Length: 60
Length: 394
Image (cartoon, rainbow over all chains, first blue to last red; front, side, top):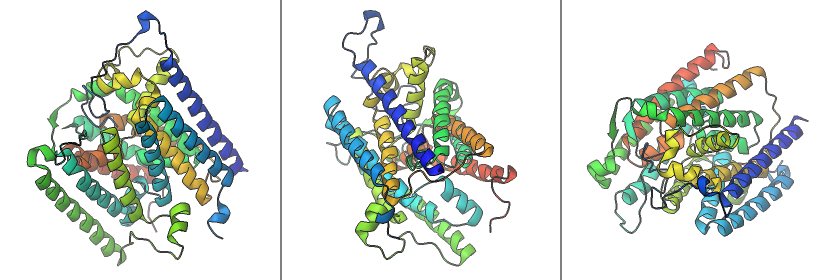
């Protein structure tokens, strides 16, 4: 019984995580954001989690 | 009973279908690189679960029982990963570029790693351990993960304050000594550690547990259904970590994504993150303002969970029976919070701080090891005081 309940809990958790990720992905994929909401990202800036300005490396 | 007989086929089929679909989606939406990093995560998750390769239990067993197989495997992993990383990071191959996991050696790393080491004894899982046990279907570890995310998010808010405390800056052994002398020096130190652990184990027990494992099952049977010998995991984890370095341009990391998820969630429900300076520059700003699926650590974390889920289902171990009492709940919350906060202060968990740090030749990785182990010793004592463990190990 516990085994079945745990399977349902895990399945629900994975489902919620997948939906949350897709919502976030969709929000960032919208083609025409409002002008005052645009965030300028410098694509030339540091391109890995190991190169942050405040904590230059191992941002794990 | 054979391993195949216990395989959880419906779960296996669902995960395989999900992995194929998600990989194709990533390739379509982003690039092949994103899909490959996700698949590397799958490999890491399968490896971790099949070999039960964790830091929390192995450190505790060494401290309490003087059994050192797990720690010796971790030392071998550090050595093998260093052999793969040092030449690349030392520009022995100029056509290949990658970032080392360098961080300032100071109070922030020491306190963070200490807190992490303490927290992982309450949470009963480290950074990688939490992910692969969640994948294994352990419901309590879902609670640990949730509060790991909360702790990591709070850590990103406080990190600038901690970075203002004394430190001696970033120290790269590869840069300071050259990659070959640095590698040789590091291998000597790791060899000494390996034999010290082995001597301690042999002195207590008269023999040592071998890393190769034993069993009469065929290679293919063990490879698919587990359990793997620790030495298999050492080789697989080092190879997959190296593949991550080549593809992503940085070593395998885990907990950056936790802070990212927490901050995105906080912002999504209307929380104000405008004063959180951690997220205002460099990679962090870029990650926050992009799809969560564009972040390599997120993809690999997803992969680890699903890979572990697949391995657990293949082995017939997925979602084992377990009841969560009040003590489990409290230790899960406290452990998760401490690990999340500590990992942020220490520039990573046992993977991004310890493994990536040492394998990159960064001195902060060694400080992480020292402080994390001291924190673990305290955590093991506290487990006895709070009656989670018995005072005397039989």
